[in-house]
Image 1 (spheres, chains in turn green, red):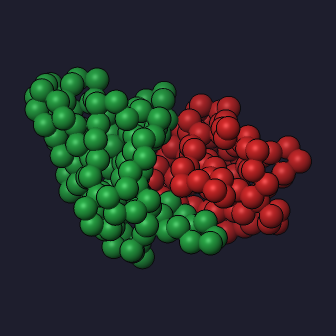
Image 2 (image 1 turned 180 degrees about the horizontal axis):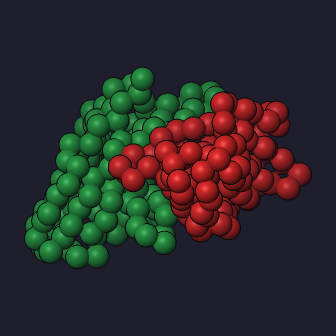
Amino acid sequence: DVKVTQSSRYLVKRTGEKVFLECVQDMDHENMFWYRQDPGLGLRLIYFSYDVKMKEKGDIPEGYSVSREKKERFSLILESASTNQTSMYLCASSFEGRLKNTIYFGEGSWLTVV
Amino acid sequence: AQKVTQAQTEISVVEKEDVTLDCVYETRDTTYYLFWYKQPPSGELVFLIRRNSFDEQNEISGRYSWNFQKSTSSFNFTITASQVVDSAVYFCALSENYGQNFVFGPGTRLSVLP
């Protein structure tokens, strides 16, 4: 079974803090993604990565950065957390083969910025 | 540009009723992939099904069935004899062949009442 693990399930951070959300997948997937999910807005893509050290901006990259130093790990960084970044963050991964594969999600990280 | 529409925001049914969740998509690609995911209250998105654009066969898996119609750009999901455990938010998603991005619909919240 594919396993996508997000390091923190629930976090509470203060405004201005630097926040790291870590994600690890165990299926040797090339692609990894970070989404945020908000009521009424659905899932919105923040960043994705298709290879080590490669990254592409998604729909809402402002206020976020990412790091992919190893294939299995994709980190989302909030340089200076703000209250409007209170949300649920979902990490996902997928295989990039000749036939497009399925995207698998972690359990989600609930971040509250106070 | 790709887009997924789930017109039903919320649906409530009584246990054992059948329910259909609608999904309409837009894409310019001739090869694409459609997905359904279930998100229970715990938060994790659980993969249910993937369908390739060149395979219009309907699929049945237990109480779940999917009706893919390219002519109407729809990929509807039916739950037969619904159960309380089916209560969740259901997302339809689209991925085009030459991109790593997955576009999600806004989701439909299904409540199955005992």
